[in-house]
Length: 460
Image (cartoon, rainbow, N blue to C red; front, side, top):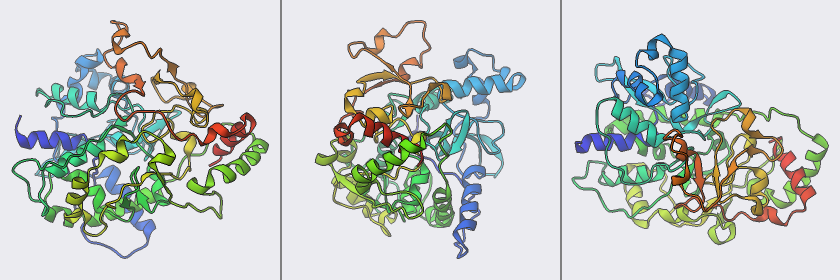
C-alpha cells in the first residue's frame, strides 16, 4: 500500500467533514442563514475524493450472508443488513439510498463516482428508530466497516497501528488527528517522515453536537476555544493543502453555525413531574456548579474539573503530549485560537438531551444514569444491545439495558457460531482508556433523592 493511500485510509477513519467546496466567500448575514448553508453543506455536499468504487457496497454481500445482486433486487433488505453489521442508521436526508455516514463522493471531474464516509458515520446516531444528525453513533463498528469495505473493493487494508475501536460506539478520532498532524510541517507542507509527537490517546464515546451551542471550550479536556473553526479542519489533513484550507474555511464557519443550531430530542416517555420538581432541587444543590442550570434563565459555567477531583479514567486527558500541542499551535490550525498548553482535567458538559446520550462518561463506560449516580452498580464487563430501539432502553434508570458479563470470561468464550462482529458488542472497562471509575458525586445521595434527580434529568 502506498504512503498516500495509507494516509487517506487513516483520514477516512477520522471525524470527516463534507461540504460544498463552492461556498468560498465569507458572509456577514445572520447565523440562521449560515446554519442553513452549513446544514446543506454537511448533509448534501461532498468534496472528498472517493475511497472505494461504487461496486464495493454491493460487494460487502459476502460479509452480510447475501448475494451482490440483492443490493439492487432487494435494496431495503440489503441496506438493513448492511446497517446492522456496521452499526449505521437510515439517513434523515437525501442520500441515494445509502445509510447515514456513507455517501457517493465526487472525483476530480466533479461527477459522483465512488463511495466515502462522512462525519455522520460517527456523529449520526439513532434512538427509538429515529435518526438524528449530531447524535453520537453508539452502535458503530468503524474498524470493521473500513476493513470490510476495503476488502470488498478488492484491496488489502493497511495494518492496524493503533486501536480504532475495540467496542461498538467508541472511536479513536484523537489518535487519528495526532497521526495526521505528525505528517505535516508547521507550514502544513507534507513531512517526509512522521514527526514524533508522543501522543497516546484511547478510543472515546462520541458526544452530541448540540452541546456546542453552550460551550466556550471544546473536546473532553476543554483545551480548545469553541470559536475555532480550524480545529475541525485538522481532520482533513489527509488530502488538502494550506491554500485549500483557507479557501474552505468559510464553509466550515457555516457548518459550525449548523452545529450550534441543533436541538436535542425531547424525552419521549412519561415523566413524574412531581418527583422531577424535587429532583431539580437536588440537581441545583449537587450538580449545577459544574453542569449549569436549565430553563429560560439557565446558565452554563463551562467548568473543567481537575483530574484528581473528577477521578475518571485519565488516559484521554494525559494522552495529549506537550509536543503535540506545541506542534498544533505552530500551524495555521492553531494560529487564531491556540490550544491551551496546560492540562487540567475534563470538562463537565451541558446536560441538554442527556437521556439520549447513553452510555455515559467520556469513554461510554457507564450504561445508565442510575449507575453513573451509584458507582456500585457499574458493571466491569457488559454486552451492549444490538440496536438502539426502545425495547432496549431502560426508562427507569435512563440508558441502555445491558447484559453483565462475568469478568473472568474472555472474548474466547463467545460461541463459535456467533457472528464475527459479536465481540465488538462487549465493553470491557479494563481496556486502555475505558475505565469506569470516578464521578462519585451521586454515591452520597439518598436513594429517594437519586431517583428524583434522574426524573429531573429526563426533562432537560
